[in-house]
Length: 53
Image 1 (cartoon, rainbow, N blue to C red):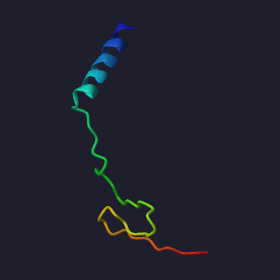
Image 2: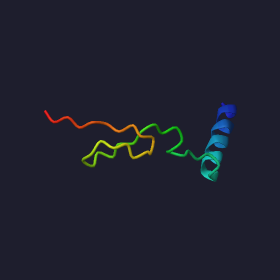
Image 3: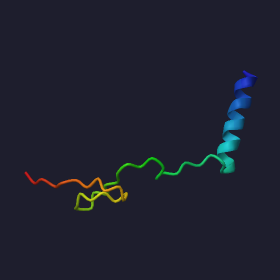
Image 4: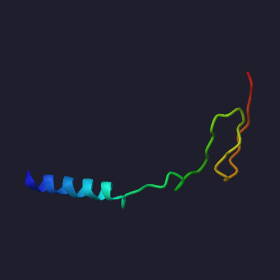
């Protein structure tokens, strides 16, 4: 039981120290903000097509 408490404390300490940060743009393929167009705002050029039914 003490082993798990120590591991949890280490993970929490690392997370709170700021050393474990994720970049939300890392690995981003496409970003569509749903603002009325189908343009890929990530800059990767995966633009869509709007089809009105």
